[in-house]
Image (cartoon, rainbow, N blue to C red):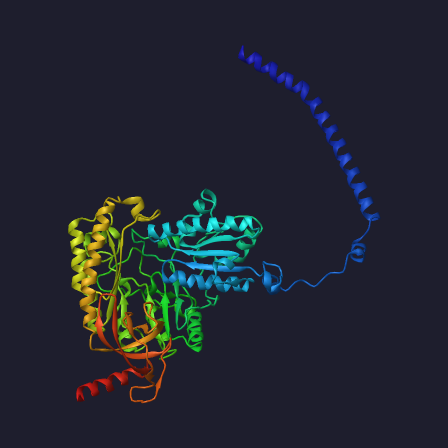
Length: 582
């Protein structure tokens, strides 16, 4: 039965297939004929129409192409009379990096056609440069934003607009809350987006909310010369970001990965500051002593790996090549022998002997080292992912004091970190006593989103316990700092004068090599230790001050004479000889 059915199917196919094929051939021939006809008509119309020369004759005259540089430099704001030029008002919160960021942002806006005002009532734009390291810092900004929002509403009633912007770490971390949820601001710009500020503000002036919080692997603002407004002291940024990934720290997530500014641009800025009469420069970076410039081929070709402090480790692979912090510090210190050089904030792991030896040898590099410990407990340090033990830290302190006798030390401490026990807390207090810091920065722990601790650890120390431990740490620090500072009584300190004391116009204040505040009576002084002719003391002068009293926060003394940084060594010798003869 199957074979008969198959034969019937084959017979049907053979019978009808030729007819289907003939119909297909007819259809194809008709389609081909129609297509040829259409192409022929198009060619005929094309030959009878205008040619290329006709278009050239009737086209309008062409302007020369714009110069790319000129096109790029067109301002976002139209040319307007000086009376209506928009004015920007800055408020800066947090660390020295934010001070430097303010100077960078202002440099960019100045070129964009803005004026700066120190009066909030005159401002068309208010920019807050913010910090996200601790919850208290963020809460301060939220409270300030509510105040500014009320001012903004009053301006609207008077038909005068006020635009509010958030810059820096808080902008990157809380963009959604700032722009969409709370709707308190018009502009949000992260730490790597300051070049975009003119465009963002232009959008805001047009009634839109604008933001750019993208982090960069390359941005160092090397070609932006900051506008310094800090008198005789200045901050110079040498690197941005951090690769350490400590479990408590939000910086790698708000500032991005480490990248170092080219050495030539740093040296150029320091030379410019020297020419302007600046007497003190602080090199800045989130991890300043891990500086590694790869901008030139000769630096990249080096096979040298990172030299760490003995007993310290990192969470990342050893980095090879690049011009390192020691070489940069060496070059900066040679620019002006009368300019003090400081740096902050370092990580203890990046203090190999060559850095310490250079600090000791160069008289204009301050003998003050910030050495953030964070905790005195090895267990807590491990949880913090700091890369060292209590013993390794104390060995580094010993090495610093051996190579740099009399060095001033400062530190950071966190009270109540995740899992911290009473025993851990006691070990931190014992570290404070054992080291003896001149200056300290102590805070209760506040958990930050995005951090390793936020994802992996429990914030299990109650707030009241954190506060009690913090108060105990502060008490121990002050007790020990008073002892350390009292050892300076009777010594003669070289002071860079900052200006009037906050408490009395009859007193002046400044800082010594160890970054301690020194207060002394205002009076005219001899121009040199051996001169009888006296001249007034003003901000930016170096003076010698004999210390008469001390506490945990500052020193007091009597000014002896004017001097210079380079002459102060000889002055010290002369005063010592005079004291000995008496």
